[in-house]
Structure formats: structure tokens, C-alpha cells
Image (tube, rainbow, N blue to C red; front, side, top):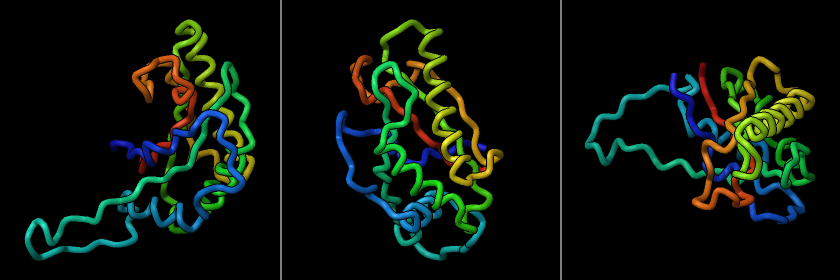
Length: 169
């Protein structure tokens, strides 16, 4: 089954941005995840034109998990965001949802180093979520190194991130 991206914006944050609070509540995260993919809670048949039956677009989430240069340490803003996300994942409506935590780097460092760093970033996020009560079997961590930059500039700080992808596998 194809994984669904939770939100492309999930990984973006202005470098150095400080968040006094996370931009979403756990309930808002749950509602948006449920709207992203049918988790089996509701099934319906629409009788009408293509336009009448088209689903409403799902808004993205601006939850941000970025890292400092050459670091796999979670920043304070990431800790706040992950606390909200962990609370959302413990909602019964998301009990069948699974997540892939993908670590990324910018282009500094060699390929082997960047794979290792991206794996450590993904493991840091996955481990923190487990520490907050999310079941380990619901989270898979993997490092992608510098293979999927977010911006055209391979050295851009926005490439130092973790993305979470919703999957039903």
C-alpha cells in the first residue's frame, strides 16, 4: 500500500524560528489525519456529477521538525510539536494508522555520513514519540540522507528535517 504524505509542510520551518506554542491542537491533528486518508471509519457512495462528488481538499499541517547543522538533537520547538503529535496518535480514531519517520540532511558531508545522520534524526523522532506513549510497532524510522532535498539549494537548512508519512501497512 502506498504511504500517504502527512503534509509536505510538516518538515518546513524558518531557521531559528521560535514557537511559543504549537500551531495545532491534538484534536486538529487527528481531524486532519482522518481527512487525509480513509481509516475505515466511514464509507459512502456519492451519486452525482464528478464535481458534486469531488472530495474537499485537505488542508496541510504546518507542524515542523527541523534540526541544527550536524545534529540529531531535538530542538525545543520540535519537542512541543511532537508532544501534540503523540497525543493525537493516541486517539482511538487513529489506532490503525502507522507512520514512517523519514530523516533527511542537507548536502554537507559525504553520502555515508549523511545517511547515518538522517537515520539518527529519524530514530530521535521515533524514540521520542515512543517515549511519549506511541506504540513502537506503529512507527518505522529510516534515513534518506540527502536524496530528497526540500529546496533547490542542496545546502539549505530546510533540508535538515524529518518528515512523517501516514501509511496503512
